[in-house]
Length: 288
Image (tube, rainbow, N blue to C red):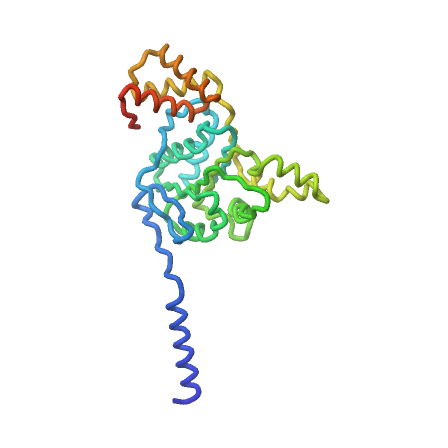
């Protein structure tokens, strides 16, 4: 064997070894198999969800304006029209994540093109790059959803999210829309903003990068604490939907007592009351 032949043979063996060491290509999701997925960054794939835990849109009370805006935005996206990324922020237990899932169900049932829901956990936001590559050429429209999104001091995971929302050369794939929920309007705690303002040489510049993340959401939908009237409307809607056998006056009295023991009124508190009441009455809860 000549010197050149030996070099060629060595290169071939190296190439074969590198090919064996290379990770297997990520399998494409079965987009036709289900309507929802959860991103698993450790395995580099989307895990199919058989049934989404959600409440019908008609049962979400006290958030009519937010419902109408998000539903219209989602319908446009499902048709391939321009639509905005949305940040749903505000009071706990007021139906932010429930609204995202209910709106997806309604828009998906109306859409001519498949509309899928993909959830990414807050701690996995730093892996958005591979996820977007997986979805970019999908033959479907995708709502990418992150529940309870927020960032703390020294947290750099917001940087890839900024690129997804607006910046970067490639930007966000046209078939992907990002919806997030948060208790914070600016996705960072107030004390963190005040601390950076007080210690920075240029206070405004110090927090601009993190605060500008919220600005990149085209829709800001605020959710505010529940009034007593809205709380009772939510309870009554659930009771009617599940045909709970209880007098209206007793339902209202017990619902208010339940809220007093919890020290708050919200859609979540209303649902917890209905679960307790239905168990006491011996009636099962099942969404039609």
